[in-house]
Length: 156
Image (tube, rainbow, N blue to C red):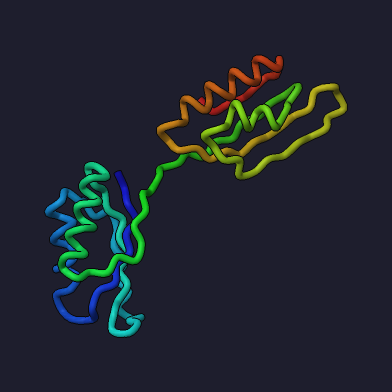
């Protein structure tokens, strides 16, 4: 599980190393680190990290260990991997039903509607969905489109 952490370290040698020890001890694997030493504030330097932990428990243990050694935690958020997909629906498209039933785990980040000269409307949806819910979301969207007798075009 990936987490986005921002900590405040005293602007003294060795503080970054001190903060990294609890992360390593609790199974954290550092994906990225930004140490903004050029912008200290009140004697503290912000350090932003993305860390992969085996579980939320490991992350919580790290937070507790950092606090015990006097490291101030500014932010700790789980990073959710998302997929961006584009879906096209042709035919009847009840957007409210599509959102409530087909896309309840996703966010629509863009859409276009065309009014063609034929009787069938065309709806293009740009969707962001957590990667672990992608298959379920695509299946829900297929099911809703089928029940409305619409054609849905989805990524493979």
